[in-house]
Length: 178
Image 1 (cartoon, rainbow, N blue to C red):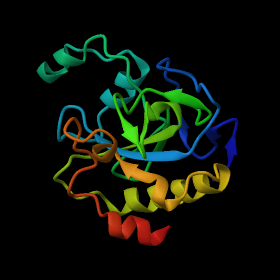
Image 2: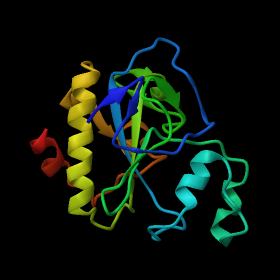
Image 3: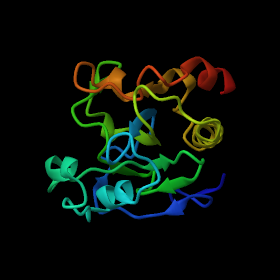
């Protein structure tokens, strides 16, 4: 994969307004998440809309709690392996919230967030693992401070608050491929 100014050329570009400048211009952590909107539904346009700040909260009753939410990730990997990018990796996306890794808080300051279209309890697709592994390897080359030990789940940086990517994520398969 080719990165230019933090953007992956092979990704569908879907810019989000929900980002800001990294305070130290440091990228040293990769955080794996999951998302589906509505919960358990895939292939809908709502994730793009949420990250772009234009989600129609009337489209589903479960969206009421998302009104006014300003959230983003750097990437989304859909069930079919499509790669979508919302924020340059050189900028701070708003994906981790209150978080801590290795004694350091505010993980958004130094992390890249990758969302997998899915749920905690449904297996991810082979296409998702393939794209995630490919993306991770590229990011590790471009951002040398991201090592296999600095790849983690949202649940690990926000325990008790977050559960993703969930028990359905095959960490052994993923890490072995790195």
